[in-house]
Image 1 (tube, rainbow, N blue to C red):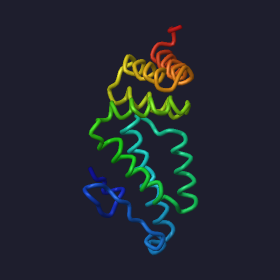
Image 2: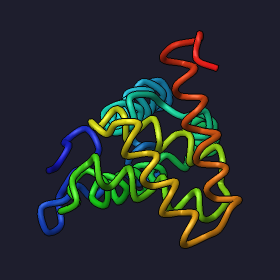
Image 3: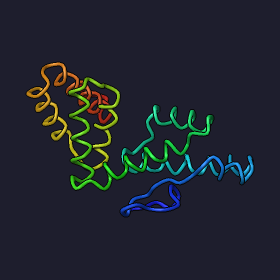
Length: 164
């Protein structure tokens, strides 16, 4: 699936960003700012579609990329991310569950939270997240399992704050 807002051409059917500093310089600064804002918003839309929200770390990366003329890096990264996540033979739900499990195993709490929410956004249920946390217990031990259950409890409390 290609997104014309992110690319000027495709390779093997996938969007490949092709914005150069020379291209941006030739359009003038005011036009470039507007174009950069639109390009950044297109990137945010990709995260909203996949995760249901734009993570704070992505907003930080976009701010740095826009400030230092490195938006093409974020576009390339987001295009690759889209190929791996959205065009995956696993489908969005399973792909998000895999990410959740891998991040639990690595002990990466905040990204694991993001992908747990992404899994729910893609149609997974709490029981699926519990299954991933239990698998992490076997493959990565108690810390990974405990982190998974901690995240699941947080999600349950968001759904129903009365949950203890």
